[in-house]
Image (tube, rainbow, N blue to C red; front, top):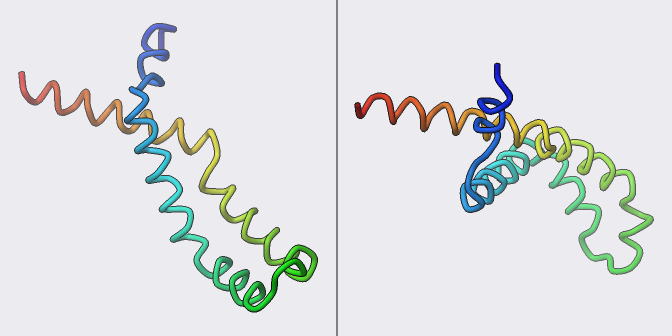
Length: 93
């Protein structure tokens, strides 16, 4: 694959990238719902002590979220978007 082709595949408009990031975050929250619930239960009724009392739950939640919200996932979503747009463009011809 040429350098120009690769750059084109990885480039999307800013608004599209923001929408893809939002979609990525929504998916991550859905996938990590059980960890979110555990953290929320731990944090319920606490104020400052949540920092040290819920450290384990926070680490678990962050680890899960990171699986679904990282640069590699975003780049894959961008590639899928570009390929989808190319497919729709060629279907119109």
